[in-house]
Amino acid sequence: MADPVTLVGVGAIVLAEGIRFCYDQAGELLAGWRERRDARRAAETEAVTVTTPAALGGETFQADVDPALVDQIAEPLARVRGRLANVADGTLAANLSDQQLLSDFCTARELLELAYGVRLTLTGEPAPATGTPVVHSRMQIEHITGRAHATAAHFDEINGPAMVDTSTTVGIVDGDSRLEGLHVKRMGGPSRREP
Image 1: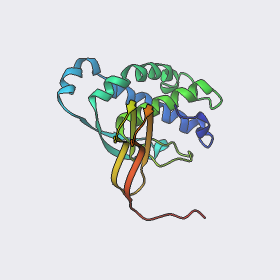
Image 2 (image 1 turned 180 degrees about the horizontal axis):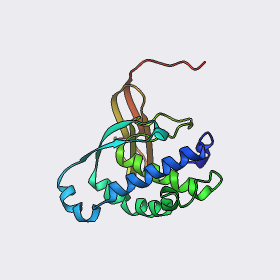
Image 3 (image 1 turned 90 degrees about the vertical axis):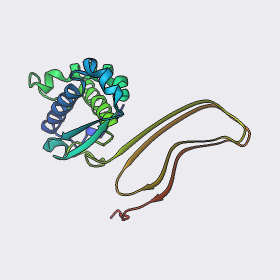
């Protein structure tokens, strides 16, 4: 789960708008999920268009949602969506000192980022902008032996802003085996210098 401290530069109005967005998007993603589950599994991905509010940059992006991934995140997303309901519908105000609320928002946002494959950034956050591509890779291996080679995420080229999040867990590595978390042949795009 993302660290709520990253919300330090965010105001209560922006947080409330972000919570409403996550609540609504979670509802759309889950709407009819059980009824359409079998039909969605027949397709590899389901294309969706997402428009974010001004608090998340006001961006519109296309996402290809993997139905198998929705199956994995549906229950935790539904639970956290329920906990955000009172702020999303305006019953309660967004309280920046409520650590449970901030944690729930970060969890909902992280699950949506996983489903959509892009970063969702609130105005004021020191993070990549909404719509920045995100790649999540999780690899768990019990034993690598001999001359095996495993890479959690391999890219021929990365151009422009992107986030790559890899996690690799291995029990035993022996012999001439090699394990890489991330392998990028070429990173393109203009370089930026910090002032």
